[in-house]
Length: 115
Image (cartoon, rainbow, N blue to C red; front, side):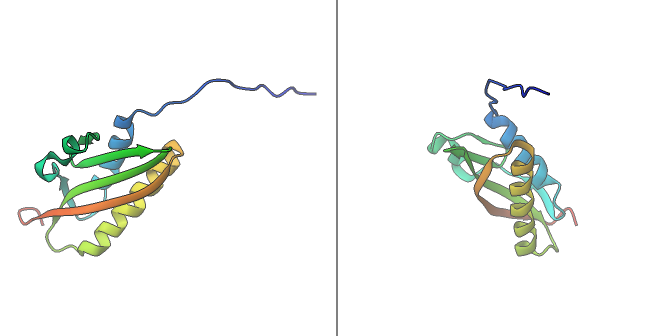
């Protein structure tokens, strides 16, 4: 007969890990040129972590994100934003097991140099 071993302890995810997951997942979506700093550095205004185009809020173990992106020209903005939302939500849920309350995508500009 085997005995079940009960594990004790706690796993903590640093906010920077969530920001990295969101940033890298967003940059992997076709049509995304790059992320940009939120206008007026909105993260400092609300005292929330904001880094390289990602504003993060974790409340009651639920992740809320605002992503500030620059898209390539000749992309369907709606489709790209929808893809970003789906992939970031899935990545955070699968990698760290946290629920995602919302992913807001803010299109800040269009990059006409990279087609």
